[in-house]
Length: 230
Image 1 (cartoon, one colour):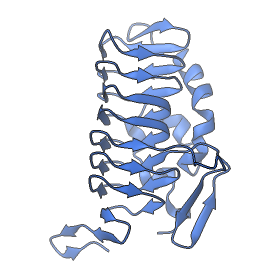
Image 2: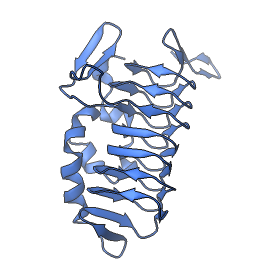
Image 3: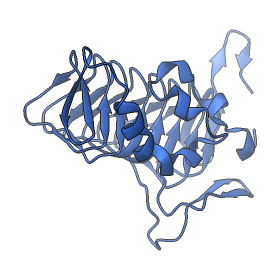
Image 4: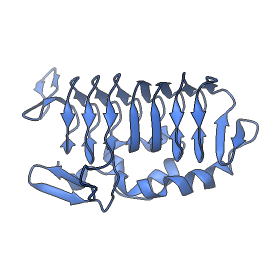
């Protein structure tokens, strides 16, 4: 697959997020990052009051969400039904936390969409990123969202590159991705559905769906009953 093939449709099941309408307004997921704040404010004003509680300026929390007392939430933000914010979770704003999603101990979110049943359970930083349905980040894994030289983020796949025009972009994680503990996803990382990343990895650029990322030089197709898938 080329970078142009990593569309919203290819990476995500948009039925698994309260932001489905918004997700479908752009072809590529990184194009959505600049509009998350505005969308949350617009959507929040339409949420049913019998299901969502307004807890502050532009903060909407589902009444059945489990929010620990030590969690901090800044708006604009939507915490969807059945989500869990554990001890010292830090929501810096511009965040959608999906149904049944876990934001764990000392995790930090900023300008993100977390699809339903996503897990960022232990010491994770997720900024300027979109995490798909059932995406899981192992303990200590983070998205790095700004380059050291502060220039705009470029997505790379071998010799191919895509100029995003964004100063800040973390990672786009497709549905059912598994990120190993203490891994760093560098700015502009895009990982396809059902792909696993080994612990302690340093990932940059595009990783195709249904693969295992061991290191930069060892990215292999997953085995199935008929052998290697691509």
